[in-house]
Image (cartoon, rainbow, N blue to C red; front, side, top):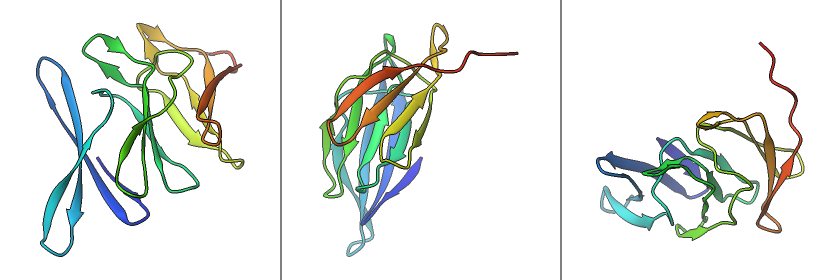
Length: 138
């Protein structure tokens, strides 16, 4: 997966073995090589990533070696990682969208079965809040 965050091109890569490892690399244009950008607070797969209005990236949810997780991380425009607040509920393979007011809607996903719920992330307060979701229909 390759994402662009203002001045940085972020390459998220992983290795699946006993657990899923996820690290990031940044290109060094001067040398034509990639430079390690550190690691997220928790290894994960099946996470949802969105670019926030301030240029940071929010990586939320996904699954670790124990199943779906409620952890989230922020990748800053300076090229560093920080842990974000925990999500309201663990989920993987969810959908995410940045709303016009800058909040992030995170909906659906899995936690053993399909989740019929949603939550909102506020970058201003670094908090997740559960919200109602429309019912699933076939």
